[in-house]
Length: 73
Image (cartoon, rainbow, N blue to C red; front, side, top):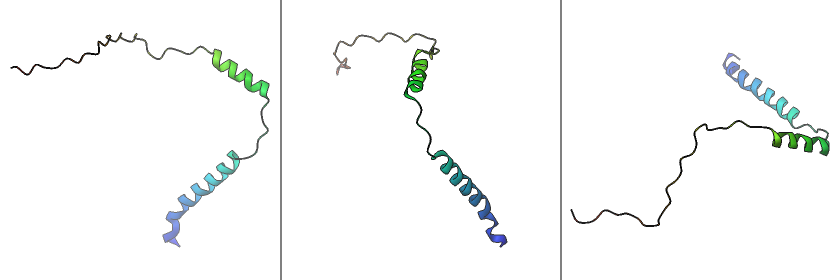
């Protein structure tokens, strides 16, 4: 019996995962459409901080001509 003690943590984790999956997959009442629209509007109008403080550098305009080294040395 002592040999099987290493299975105990795996069994406990499996049982907990099964309980969580059963709870997470339960049927829930569908939320009201008006409430969902209010949440969406609140999220879209929310001010978000800037991610980058530095301005992006301007890219050089491409001329479409590749510059190659000359074969003369």
